[in-house]
Amino acid sequence: MTSPHQHTRYGLTAEHRNADIHLHTRIPCESPLSLATEKSAQLYALLFLARDSAESGIFGDLNPEIQLRVLSLAIGLAQEALVLSELAAQGGAGGVSEDG
Image 1 (cartoon, rainbow, N blue to C red):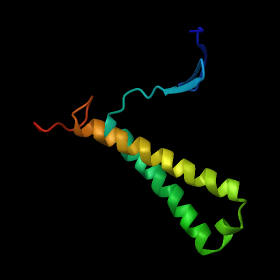
Image 2 (cartoon, one colour):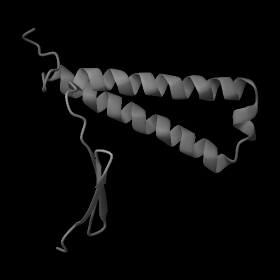
Image 3 (cartoon, rainbow, N blue to C red):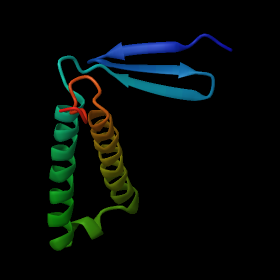
Image 4 (tube, one colour):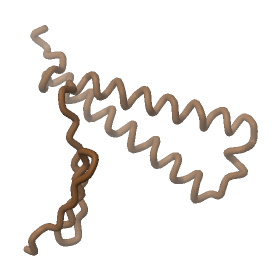
């Protein structure tokens, strides 16, 4: 196994190890639930803009590659919100536990 190459900036670390790229984000002082809430709000804002652009016909006029990237961004935000919500439901680090 080759040694990983890393670069860190703005609280984000990119690590290249063999054929894999890992991105790690450090977000201090956040609970899983509060971060899931923030990711959900970001997703809502993105989809709100996409919907308004679709209604006015602008979204359909965009290059298909741009449309795909907007939708991929939405998928990524949805996945992050889901995983963080599941972690909060399990009672992880400031999340809500079944015990109250």
